[in-house]
Amino acid sequence: MVDAGLIGGIIIILITAIIIAYYQYKGYLSWAGWDPFSAESSLLISQGDISRKWRAKKLEEVNKRQDPNEKVVIGVVGEFGKGMYLCVESALKKDFTVNMVSGDSVYDDKIDKLAELVKNYPNTFNYYIVNGRPRHHFLFIGRDNLFIEVPHEVNQNIKKSIGLNGAKPEIIDKFTKEFARMLEGAKKADESIIRQLKPIVIKPNTG
Image (tube, rainbow, N blue to C red; front, side, top):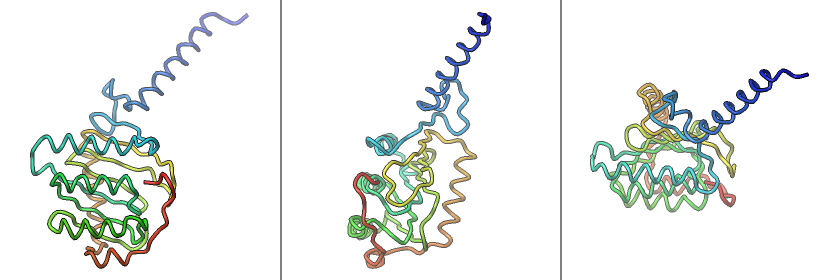
């Protein structure tokens, strides 16, 4: 005969595991102050525009602060998928200063658009190119909102990422240094250089 106390203990463990798993997905245990990364972090999956909506929300929040020192977007990307391009375009239209490092191959439908952005925003859009494809992709929106992508392959439709709202100083420092390191080996691109980038044919839903 199975001990009732043992069954009760197993049930409690299972319920606790389910609750923890739920809150890890929704907010990395931020409800209990256990979040090791930020004030509140969220797992994002690039399916159903979840990650795009998170970035758009952060842009709006920073824009409403009306602090010119906060209106910055800094990041490292691979091929400039649709979601990242839309984020950069939106930031520029809101008068953000945008500094981006990209690989030397870009989705074919973004090359002309990126060239136009550099042409139209010469004082606020700084686009740098490195040889090859950066493996680690991330984006600062403002000073402490950080979007981090899980390493993925080119044209991978479903990509996982994490959004940090109010990232902790040590996390900010780590990624700030990584951006500076990438910048050291990068070349600033003008309109003509961008138009000469190697095109990648984009698959549906990639971005």
